[in-house]
Image (cartoon, rainbow, N blue to C red; front, top):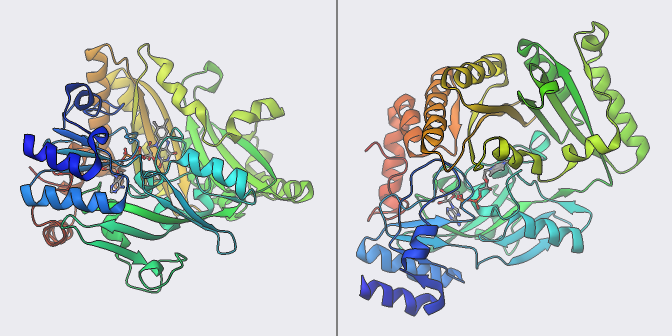
Length: 459
Ligand SMILES: Cc1cc2nc3c(=O)[nH]c(=O)nc-3n(C[C@H](O)[C@H](O)[C@H](O)COP(=O)(O)OP(=O)(O)OC[C@H]3O[C@@H](n4cnc5c(N)ncnc54)[C@H](O)[C@@H]3O)c2cc1C
């Protein structure tokens, strides 16, 4: 271990390696319910070359390597399940280039959502990227590689759909560019070459380390507005969402159902966020959206909540900070959610499942959904709050998360950013030939089996 430590010091410098108990403790967990797993070393590289050197060393000595962004995924994907090195990418946080005309940003893997948001606001105010509702420290790479979604995902899909290209370091040390950047100085698209970026999307860091990536940017509207539509019958939701999405006016279309505050209990809310460059355009869009659901309004079975500007403000925030406040529901704040990617048709079943599990297992819950693409699918989330200082409460939340993962898979959904036990639930239903292909790909890319081991495995 001493020799490995010394070799790591030679690669990144004394200040950026630690095998001390304090750091190993801090890096052993994330804010969710998954149990702590201590790494042997924490390493913070500053360049692609340093990442390459670390991987060569790890490969030679068969040391596990776990890439880490901000560690905010909540499902424990960046814990060192089998010890080894946590590769904390936060020093590699440069914004390398913004191409204004072709609307993309090229960043290093440790660049955070908040950094890019602030940079664009200052230097390119006509542009924005799609930000998740995660705290601003979340990294762009960590989010893209788990197929995250955000505040313009209704219009533009998953964040991985907005990816133009990657620079990755393979576990065997080769630095590889994928997308147009493999052939051109411009990172404008993944087409028309064979799309190998998928080898690093959805794999939870088990195939290599992303060091750079380019993501698409979008027009930043001057005016933004939100409508909140309410109904009481979950069975109406797929049609309501379908009609609203048909207008193609929304950037973000979300739903939320919570027992708190009291006035919200029992109601299903759909938030439709849209923007425009003039007030006239904004009003025109608002009218089109209203017309799309006028049948429900006329029948008096659903309607928009009249909202003064101050009440709209929290719904217009990017990221939506109110989500994190759910952790305050229990003392000793903690929350974790199962996000299930599923067809919009399953909305009512998904909602009933959340209510049933929360009542059966006595957990504090919040349910919701983000529509991805124009009703192409949704990320339905089941968030459970718990008190970190109360092991029984943490266990209750864990049981609810497990039950949700299992039932969601049986229902036809797929848990997103699934923790290791939930990955096994997915594998249980997966086409065995797909799982066999995944294993063959991993064996080729990572012959020594060093990348985030314990994930996407049966035992
Ligand atoms: C309050 C709250 C709200 C949230 N809302 C959203 C939301 O709206 N949308 C959404 O998508 N998510 C959301 N999340 C989930 C999560 O925080 C985000 O997806 C976040 O962007 C993950 O990024 P990270 O940097 O924390 O990744 P990490 O947790 O550090 O890593 C995630 C996974 O990616 C791998 N990884 C990280 N960096 C690399 C790399 N450079 N190369 C290879 N693999 C790598 C890790 O090994 C791990 O498997 C939310 C979380 C919270 C706490």
